Image: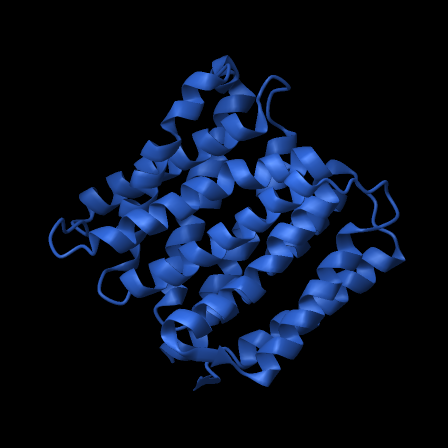
Length: 290
């Protein structure tokens, strides 16, 4: 039963991540994207630590220090790398490369370090999802191809893939809540310097408080708790592929709440994404040794 439910935890996490872009649209104009990302990780990490302490789920003994620091560093790097990629290349290209590269990089890392290669169904479903992601975002707008921006986007994809792979190993010996709490608590410390590099007065405004709490508690703490819980049963490569539900959620929320419009090509892309995700969810445990 746990194996059947586990992919749903990943999907629910991706849906919560998909609210991030819409939430940022309601942030004060003075809020820099990187500052928002740093605040998100700080609030999320603090909330997870407090929850773990109150529920008695935080055990300071027996932690794999190297893996924990690597997971925290991966998540801390993802925020500035992704936002820098979007700033260099635009939302479309930055998002497609970062989100689209993560599943492939995750599958490669899993094969290299753990001797597990994804099944043929995983490859077919992941490629279908990535093509859907391309159609969803590349809709005829001007495209900026900057080498540094591409590197930032690939770095973001690698950071997320690395976080998933490493935290998947940690959560096998720890509770999902304490795993997320420790990793994001340390990750928040890594990003603290950004809170002093940017003007943070916006966070005291009502909209700034609301956005920070939503991003920290819902889109980070709750989402990554669910993600960690799913990683107990779902292979890292499949988990990253299932997280492609994030752009679908973001696109639909953009239409419903922000007033954005999607053309026919975008809707076809959403359909392809959904088809790939359904295939991955049904085959999430079909892994064979390399």
